[in-house]
Image (cartoon, rainbow, N blue to C red):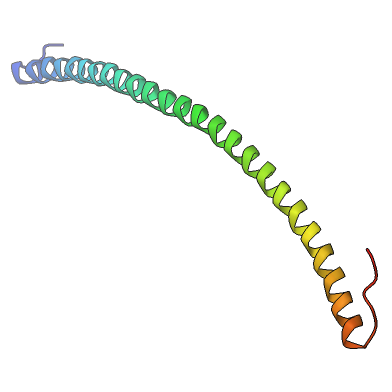
Length: 101
């Protein structure tokens, strides 16, 4: 079977097109892998930064909890004292006397 020159040129151009396409694909894959590696490295760095700062936040929250707990204790003490004062005032209004606490 004898191929005409135009058919032969078409086949050669088609084969060259395949090689150019494969070369372009492989070239872009390498660039994508490199850019993905750079992106992943920056994401890992950001995660490490977030984790490092989260530990500081945890310490601050623990300190705030201690402060809140001590303020709660003071508030309960004052509430008890206010109840005693109100009881004494009510007793005085009724003409009674103040009891020793």
